[in-house]
Length: 236
Length: 319
Image 1 (tube, rainbow over the protein chains, first blue to last red):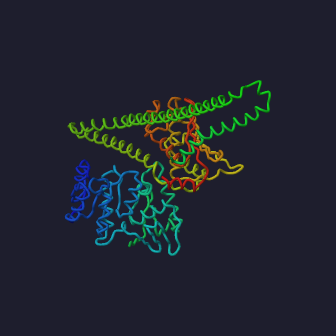
Image 2 (image 1 turned 120 degrees about the vertical axis):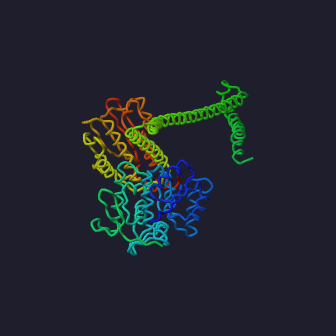
Image 3 (image 1 turned 45 degrees about the vertical axis):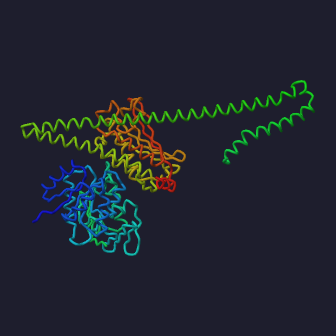
């Protein structure tokens, strides 16, 4: 099988010099770009299967690259490298169509796991779920822009965190998501005993969705690990 | 001339002259009718006395004003000096916290590059990884603290009793928690505690950090009391313990970032737990305080305003 092509974009050579060989050893064909403009050129010529994109860069930042790509209908999967605790950056990452994001500093093995998951989720030629404004799964509907959800005709009352959690589950279907990862995705950072907060929020969602944990239509518990969204999700 | 200046001119110059003339006329009338005054005072001295009194008044008010201004400025400089001093202490601590892991990493890398034995290289690699993780955690904790000051709060009505029960249940999993006598007292009579408005997860984190501290700085058999009560428009939550206590000179500094008392250097921790507590409490318009006696124990209290959801949300939207 031909190895998959990956574009790594970061202005910090200390990072690309160390991360690129690691990713090559993990089986990817890797090219490196040092800023946003170079990234857009490389995406056009190299045609990567996935892009790892730093947010803070000179000349053109990762945010602008993401916006331009999605604006011209380019759905190449993108994983953003963000800063821990930057709530606005995280919200932006999800809203503007990043497929996933990782907080710096991260474990490089985790990055490889995320890349594989994103590539698995990808359906060639189709718009990825991460960029869809409306998501549906059976009778459950999510409007990501207006931050509202419905089951059939009736609207769900959800706290903002519960909605973000549901959105993250929706955009990562059939993936085992650890409590720590959900905590990081929704709260922006982990904290001691914070995994309990995830459980509380999942319970809130299950009540709202009327989802039976033993025979789940939507959220399945993966014992000792976390959760998985089991429904089939469609986006438009 | 602006209206304010005109008003000032009228009050300071025209009004006293007018009042002076009016006063003189009235006094003259009274003087004519009252023979007693004739024997006591000469009419021509009255304007002089009035003028003197007015001057004294003007000089006095000027002195008071400049004294108040001086005091304000002194207070401002004091606060500024305090902030500069706190920042200097923070940088010193940051330097200290980073120096050791960095030194360990440099030594580890030297071993890695030069040691002929694979085993020694593996040890060095492990040690470098641990130190890198330590630095990562330090940086991410500092980011959390910065994030806390700006992130929007998700305020809901919080039942403090339930919050405390859940936090206590989570804290039971802390190392050595089972060897402490932990109790919870929340009033039910004559009425239960009023709800407060707050971000459940953040309040949970604040109380969890206080409990974590309490377990860390107590020994087997020590008592930890968690209690809550109503105090006017506030709900007060206290975490009290019979632990080692904090030396008097350390008490004012415990809320500072990266602060670690001399006697507790051996106890593991980031030095950011209480700074997080303070930040969370302040975001909720509350106050955090501490009382301690070395050798006897410590009580941390947090005061949180009773549920005014709209007020808090208003504050959030302003931020």
